[in-house]
Amino acid sequence: MSRHETGTAAPEARPVARPVVEERAPLDEAAPGTPGGASDGGPGMALDDGLGTEPGTALDGGPGDGLSGGLGGASETGAAPRPSSVRHVARLLASEAGLTFRRPRNLAMLGVLAVVPVLIGVAVRLASDDTGGSIVGQIAGNGLMLTFAAFAIMLPIVLPLTVAVVAGDAVAGEAAQGTLRYLLVAPVGRARLLALKYANVVVFCLAACALVALSALAAGLVLFPAGPVTLLSGTTVSASAALLRIGVVVLYAAAGMAALGAVALAVSTLTEAPIGAVAASVVTVVVSQVLSAVPQLAAVRPFLLTTWWGAFDGALRAPMDVDRMGQGLLAFAAYVLVFGSVAWARFTSKDVTA
Image (cartoon, rainbow, N blue to C red):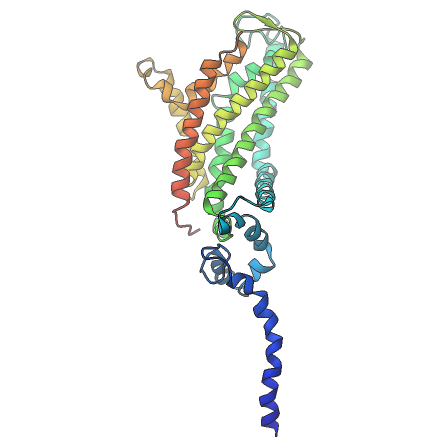
């Protein structure tokens, strides 16, 4: 009699297990090739096996669910990205930028970028009040010229060093800390993750150049008189027109630094040592500067990235030297395309062991 009761108890227990099967059904019925599918052996399986959680837990209810439903949604159907996908991409970019701007090392470098224009202004103030024909010589007569002088002094090495540290650490730093493989098991896609990291580098470049301009403007207005600006071509423009030209310089300098960021990011995908990626990027800048200074290598100069950084002085001429600045922007775009392709080819095919 007890055996008969035991035998009838088993069918009564089956409905209890059915909700678990139905809860995991969306993963089992996912389209082939879905990153979060439980049956395709994709990143979702790697996450379950690697972290030892219950199958489907990280993707059903954990953080992976937001990424699977947002970033991975467009790849499942091949249709246009859903609005939720755009929100998740923006949220991930904001997270990357937050980590970048909260890191003490990066904050220290931004502090240096803000202090250097002030030091330049104080040095000019203490040295002499005489004006001259050069950018630095005109600072004493007009504080707005301090912004242009700051970029002329900091673009060759100070700004590139700051960008190289951030971009060189983008991938190699994650690999060295052992967090890169946990990012790759999320159903985001390596190409999209690399694009987000480069977008974060571009945001940092724009913020760094804007900080230099704001610091120089503040120091120039405090230490020197301000008014109409005499350009390098001899034409005098109003202060408001000069501010617009400062904005052009900031955008052009940020584009040049973004091109260097693409080079550093490509190097960062080739190594798991962030200091090596940073050093290689800085050495590339120094070697380019040396080659640009050799007269016998004038034929190579147009192909060097550092050659076009100084073309921002086209904004100090009337009319603006749009042709030369346009050539510089084309050179920056070519560097981004070439080294971005190198980074994509390496990052999408490399084995991450750290």
